[in-house]
Image 1 (cartoon, rainbow, N blue to C red):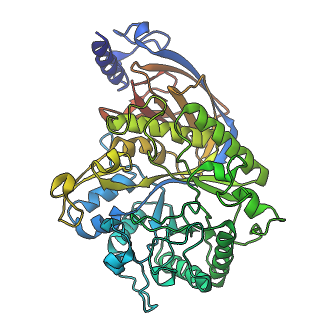
Image 2 (image 1 turned 90 degrees about the horizontal axis):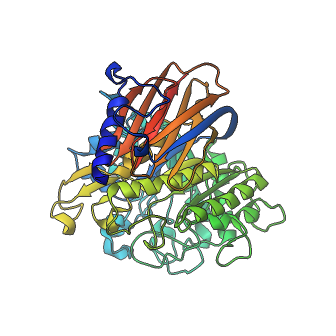
Image 3 (image 1 turned 90 degrees about the vertical axis):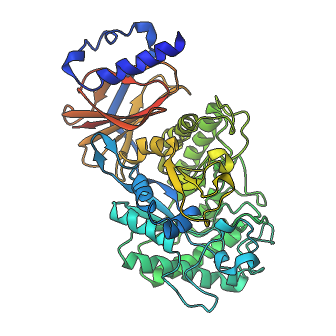
Length: 536
């Protein structure tokens, strides 16, 4: 009987939300044919546009690692994959994609050119570089990455970020993109200026071609040693990272680039608070960079703004942990007047002890998507993140239990196949569409505004207002197996909504559009993510 009620609720809520006159009803009463007990709960929501928080910089994902090879070789499928990531077009009630406003581009270390001598045994994670061992640039390199960059720009992606996992192999101590140096940087002490010049040259080249590279992120998860053989990476001390930042600031200034430095990208939020110092230092990162008494102080650099960037790994196993840690981040950011970016997340780490999660091997596609929205919500509303990015845009199906990706890649040869075996097929994951509930509608320049409701780990929402105050976007997650009915009050608006549409992602819907009547109570489908777009 339980499954029948859910199906009935889905049917009734879907029909009623089409706006057909045959299904008109009194918003104060349950929908026709759906008894009050069929709802999980009624929720009162107040959105106050006069109470504003952070300004949104963008929602994104990275091109590691498959975009290089798919973009180069999968000629018949790559255009549609680009649409899934970047398109802002809605056609016949169905968005073509999720309109990412930020695209993170991997500045590879040149492991691909070294082949087996690179020390990277996972072949598809060997990354190309625009500079050869002879020191000359070859802008025809990274063909697949450039394809997705071109498509992102053509479809309106506003920001690009160049990030590096490792210095170029010709400038490392071991001649590889992975490290044997433990906690220390693998970059030769005499090559800090060369590496900074290289990163600045790449941005200068692509900005001249019409791209908007707003940031360079020169190091990734520096607290790790990166002595494995799976991917490029290097450890860095705080002092070494500050030294590279000074060189990069010089290189950007020399080239008159309006590009800033996004530094350190820790693998967890705690490195920016006093709860957890850098593993081999007695300082947290914010104090190390911005306290004038610190030996690694770089707060006076022209291109290093007050910006905290980190990954949401290892602090996402429960609702309470998410909120406690992110509240500490918000306090630290406020101490230094810093903007906060969440620059990388997927369901990395232990599958056990996660709040309402069945485990990596058995979780459904939608279950992973719903869990992701908990991270997004708490990053945005507790840590006050101005930007939020997923980890890899695409990966092979069943790699890491499908928990690292937005787009499934099905290789020739099945699970034992390789991206290099020939052109395979692909499919969008529900994580892509659920991210789209934010990325397609909450655009750069929007401000988060106050949304007050009785939220918990099973029901939560946030709201955003456009810069011209003509569009309001509200995003909700309903974990319940029953619909939720919202009684919404809008305050502080310049005028009443002239139109209202919803976009729902669930096990059976992928950002499915419906036209609604402003002022009516709103229904959230069971186990869904729903975006309401008010034109004012």
